[in-house]
Length: 272
Length: 262
Image: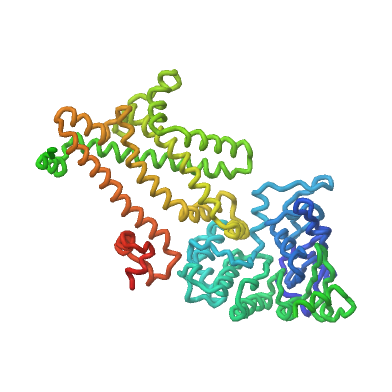
């Protein structure tokens, strides 16, 4: 598989039509919580280097879909590929068979995730949080991991917080540390699950700046967010999800220009 | 009423070799039973949260059964009961040059089985207190179930487990006295046999009570030190209180120690 982490030129050129196999490919992904169908057949793709934002009301299934991508939730029907690997299953005669935990763990390694509640390991210092994955999962020598961990923390503006415990940091600082922790695994894909929803307005900006920087660097990202102006600024495409389905997916200009899309307009009206 | 003060002080200053060896037995029994109990408790605690129903059932049954039986009955059961029924007879054995008597082994096993049931509940609570987000974060960086258990779940659960575990050990130090019934030469048994020959019953009992008090008090300090170590992440460094301050605060009316600082 071609390792193309360079950003595609211009917005809107990305997508399956570029000729490259998309990094993320969802085809009719469905999921039920008990009797409640929360994903009713999600189909979309994310190219290498593309930034896709997913917006929609709470309960529309956007976070659930994001969590399916790294198997924190399992989908029950359809196909979901990351880097051509079928997530969570292997296909036997057209049927889905669940992968053993070990294989699922392997698939997660190259997918970074940033959570709404940061979820830093609170019993470890910031630097320990960042080097934990590289040392335990990637079996990197400690010195290498520490060196790169420090670099990453400096990059996200936490150069003076290596030895602080998460509880002593502000929400914005914790989230930036969480981003550094995910990046330390050198992921091919980064998932952001409402990364600024738990932050106050003052610290939201500093986290969004870090994510925007990352977008500039050519990282492939899927961002579930409520920050519409941010999504407009950093995304190659924006998807609007409603009731477990992708209502529309388009480049930012086209997305905000859909004056005839009633449900999108209703959603945009409530958020602004 | 007569209290032989010179005999009493003599006991305190020089308890004699027999008593000191008995003290070693008491401490060894408590430490070994606690360690074994912790192993059993960890298995039971995880077992009660197992995805497998049969495992959950067996562990819940164990907790229910053992918590419903007095320790004294358990000890006699392990030492005499099993042998009488022909299931298992403890025999003296030598490990690394130390002879462990049959009664000592039975006592350690009995106390551990008892402790394991209580510890299982404590461990289960501790594991349940670990946030779902912490586990998901560990999964998201590609940790295996085993890795996230010993790197994330257990260290975080330890913060919840350690305080009640410390209290259990305090209890254990005193519960070892029951092992006298099956003939373990611990401090209570040697005190009793000595009182039978000297008739200084009250003096000897006060002395042995003080010995237990000393053990639990020393443990109290150790426990505080461990807990303060585990709390490093909570307060900023300049706010961290010394063990001495914390002990002082424990005696003060306000357990928070706030009045002490002001």
